[in-house]
Image 1 (cartoon, helix red, strand yellow):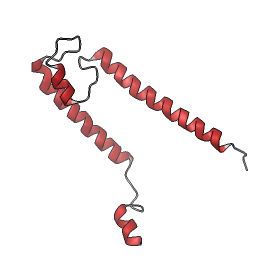
Image 2 (spheres, helix red, strand yellow):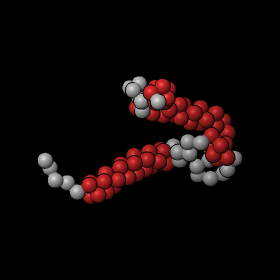
Image 3 (cartoon, one colour):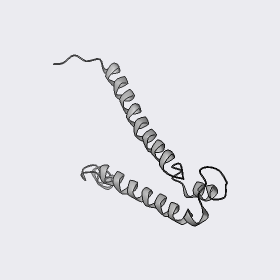
Image 4 (cartoon, one colour):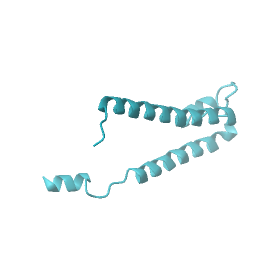
Length: 101
């Protein structure tokens, strides 16, 4: 049997997860910042507010509907992806857990 230090392994797992999340989220924000006008707000309320400003990240009013549709589409795509990734096998669904008790 292999000898291991659980606190050290847990710390390594936490650090690895933090770095992965920071890298993925950071790269997404950086890409949106440099290659789009919205700087990755991903929020229709902020997009509406940005359409009323006169800054470098301003969204032209005529482009606003497209940004809102894109943000909602992205949210739906993320929901579908996470629903697929987190689907259960049926063995631990809340309804079946209640029936077992």
